[in-house]
Image 1 (cartoon, helix red, strand yellow):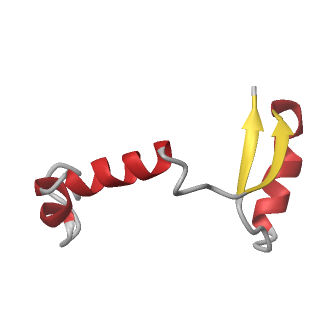
Image 2 (cartoon, helix red, strand yellow):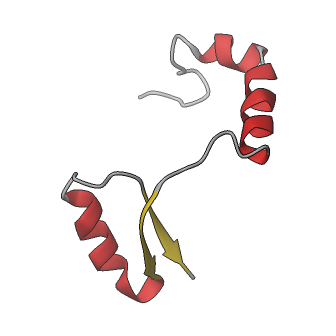
Image 3 (cartoon, helix red, strand yellow):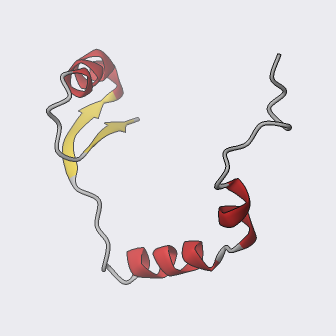
Length: 67
């Protein structure tokens, strides 16, 4: 049995000790230097269609579900 508190990937310490990378990414997003491509947007009622599209593995971008 693995207890999640004891298990962590080898890179865990490297990422948790230095949070400046997160601040740089946040600043870049807010400045519009990083954008996330949106492949499709679906209302929650069409969640099955969204999952089917993603399962096809030919999506170039994120699928957004609106509530």
